[in-house]
Image 1: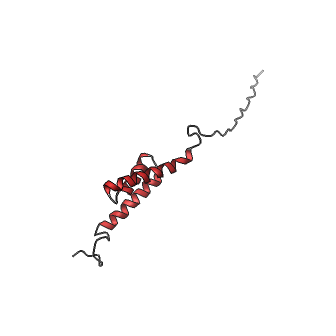
Image 2: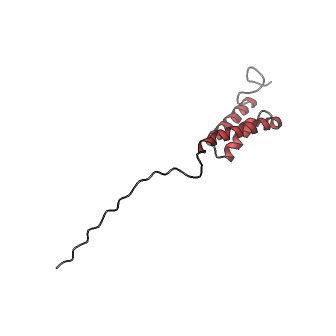
Image 3: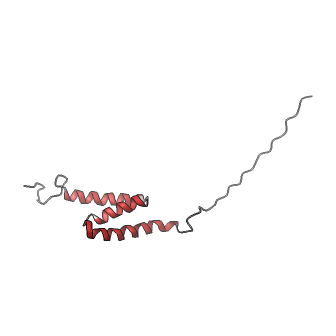
Length: 100
């Protein structure tokens, strides 16, 4: 007589949603802390670097704290300052755009 196969049981899985640990409930404060750091450091750096202090501080804090928004904002500010300063992009001193 042939052997019978044993019926296999299906295992049931239970889905559980667990809150991420390690933040202590203060995970949403990171962007605010980054903004405070960038603003404070920018004010301090403006005394030494001049008008490039705020953009440089924003970009630096963005890199150090891995904040994409601050990286983009700092790069945009530096680009705007460079565009105003460079004569071949549109900056300069004369009205017609030509420096005689």
